[in-house]
Length: 277
View 1 (spheres, rainbow, N blue to C red):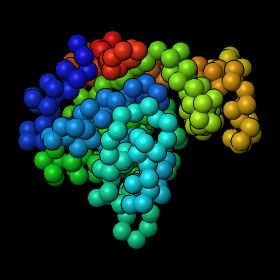
View 2 (view 1 turned 120 degrees about the vertical axis):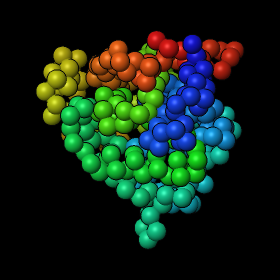
View 3 (view 1 turned 30 degrees about the vertical axis):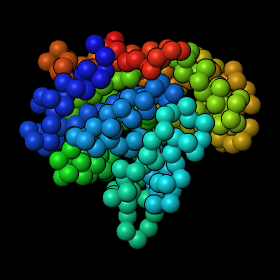
View 4 (view 1 turned 90 degrees about the vertical axis):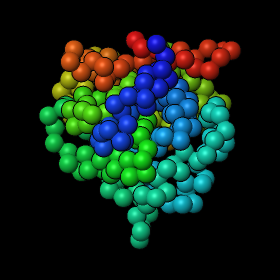
């Protein structure tokens, strides 16, 4: 079953603003995993308000000029033409300073592997504000994350009415795409980001053990020379994966219908396909 079929069922059944004010669809994806293609497809529905990467660190300094400057055509994204990524946040900007209301920059990378019992009322209030913004318009909220894979269990616990879909791509293909961005466009972000996640969360005992086992060397600061070693970046992504999708606990049988893992399979001749794992 394709993920779009799952989405169609969500839109046609109980996952609608009319029947459940807290209902939503959360897409948990990694970078370069075709999650943006899926988000853009759902964004095209008149019944959906689709938020792009609601934990993105740039939301802390977002303003209207920045919204217009960041679009599929503004960098070598490989994404199809479309409106600026952050257009849906325009009505949620702070009045007297830059940034999205209630957003805190720590949401991006800190507590990345938070367990379901952890209390984070600020993050919960921020995500709830997105859901309420969409439902006030009579639309289904769709939140496409690239910074949630280590805390899916937390999000499931605190937003149980949502449909949680995990988009998984072969990590070798993800790494290949990240490396191509670095070598072709000098875009270091997708190689750098796993290092940032590991460094910000290295205090976690299990993560520290994984870093030691894989001999991942975290530099004292994440500076310009970080991505000089391609092999180091590949190993960092491997360590991240140990605590990303493979580490996420499967849903209980009673909740299996609301937590759907997906496997994404881009092909040379067709649009990427996402299937239930």
